Length: 302
Image (cartoon, rainbow, N blue to C red):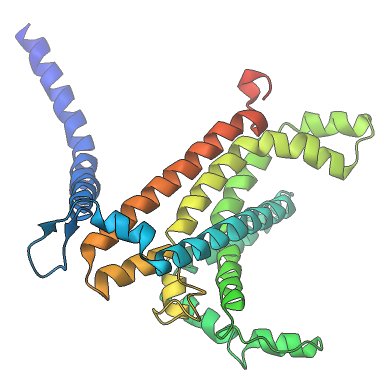
């Protein structure tokens, strides 16, 4: 009996040893900071003095007396609802091209994945800013086509599109996941559709999309969450201001300015929790609607 208890203790100790780093990291870097931000969200806290409790005043101010909050929310929703579908569509398009037998396919996948590794860096954001400058490559290309130059840093809509194109360029991670999904589609389905005389368009919408729908759901959720948290490109391209005319004032950038420019950490914490609620609602909507368009083979249909 004692030997069994000793063996059980050793097995549990090994398990706790392996899970310990995750538990400690989760407590120190996720759970405790989240609890602290929830507390700060109901306080007046400037990072220098002791927080003072003010109840829901931060939330009230946010919804009733802060026009920039609504402006940042509008810009972020445009960025997410335009950028994410374009990014996923482009990722799927490239994945289908790469879903072929080729000796250099590994090299192609690596090349196309690189933007996702370096795309969020400061250096790439600076490069993007130069590309879209008044005398940058993009305007030179437009002029070569006989089109007028675009003042990317003077027009809010143009500046936002600059950020969107940068996000679309970072399609590598989604592309690899789509590619893995394409590899798992049984080739017999395409062979049977060929026998029935189905064309490429019909095969795409009747076979490829339904079979990839769980992966489309996963990529949509992950890319939506990531898009809401985009910060570095907006900060670098707008020089931390969110201009012109708040055209690139993404929610995360405005949250950062509240916390570290205006030193209103209580208000910034409240904004963080509102972002969490918005992301949770959108994720819930995606999961709820997925019952109608996501195909799970194990369930035999939708």
